[in-house]
Length: 337
Image 1: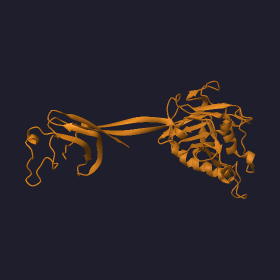
Image 2: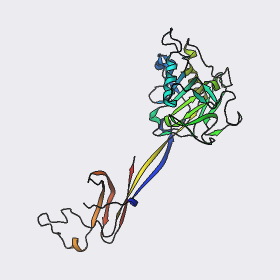
Image 3: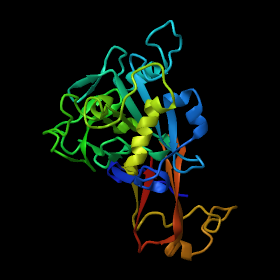
């Protein structure tokens, strides 16, 4: 074993971006969507449930929720306390996560909203974040005017941030290309944008006012009461619109940081070894004259130590590397985090 102190120029830090589809088997587009009847019929299913890749319900793709600051869309916790219901709880949770302030309202474009639909991509489907500019969500179905939505990351002059990280507006368009037939920003007149795209927490918030059939031409009739039946559940209405559109395209992105360490074995270095095959165990003398005049070694492993002589990492070569006075070697060690 031989040691060598590394210099500053022997280290290099590199960052690579890796993209993949956000759905099962790294697929970028889903065309079929399934919910779980047991979960749907439960109390929580009235305001939150998961969407699966198959009817068997084994692999969650994303979750759907509905939040309302006034508690509409779900039955009140207590009929004597107005405005307190599961949907108001959902609203407060996202308020804390996204805005970091329970007294701040959501703003979609230039429109302040007291309610939203939420689509949260299952955490197992992305390692770093969602990839801005790749989303295409089609909403359609019975009584719903077909609408294709994307984020405006490619058109935004600057990136906005909040407690959840980067914030982009949802607009009419696909794969980051804005459809300007609505207006210059792709927004819905008088109702701001279609929602928010929050790639760093894997969340999409939809503006129900922009999709409400009573206000615009989106066609999803919003339930704003506390007396509901199966057909009046807002989460089910959104699921039906997503299923009817039969196309949800989204990619994930991971920034992989790598440390490169360059180990340079010059011609005069690492030609001798303390291996017993070189040195006599009793006298410490070199066993063979050839090991003195024409030594050779085989490099198999590189170990990285700190100043306290603690082993931090090891790297194995794919095959032994022959080394003698006539050869120099450059070994690149890559450390991924």
